[in-house]
Image (cartoon, rainbow, N blue to C red; front, side, top):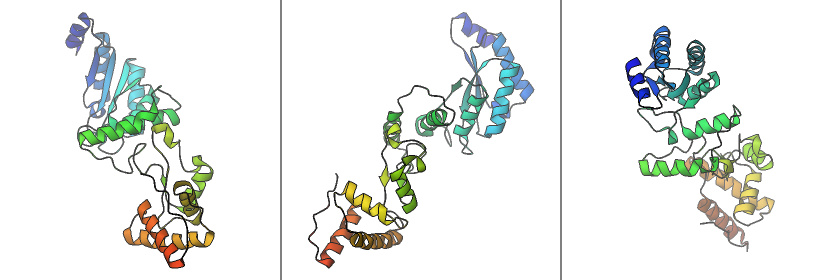
Length: 270
């Protein structure tokens, strides 16, 4: 490492020394390795949790020790084999690391790496570190990469998934409509997303009233709303999911026809 680093610095290069599998290395050996790199003129050390075996507490201690013993800038490179890539990246930053590797949607070898959107938003809202990134582009970028990479984005993907701002439970939907922060850690608009109010087996009458008034342009009488809700719940149970808007429209049409009600058609978007 001394020879390679000195050669690179002799050519006026910025040098980041890669500590492969640092998370499983002997701590004394790792410190000496980092010290050798620093003495040879390295600008930073890339700490690699190559097979994703660390957890945040061990990560914090490992990075804190390296910084105290060597004093070299640390770059975090974490893997998600145990689902802790983002947590370990954040732990490293809390311990003093100044750089972090991320990928869009966490794509990478095996289980992948720390996810760009997760790291950016966790730093901003949990650690109060704003990187100055335009976060409104996180979801569009996430969707684009998922499409071109042929790697569909899970609906429950943190920060950018389709279901992150989808509310079905009657209590949740009612709460988020009155005070969004009740069930949302940040606004959907902040990451280029939008809130969805879903109708399913857990929905309440407030959800039906809101859905029809704000999305379909219909102010439902209470008795009609209750009838539609009952049928919607039954259908959701049968289909094991929340309903699509077109399914709600069919229920509305059926109820109106059975009751011989002359109500306006729904204002469907798209």
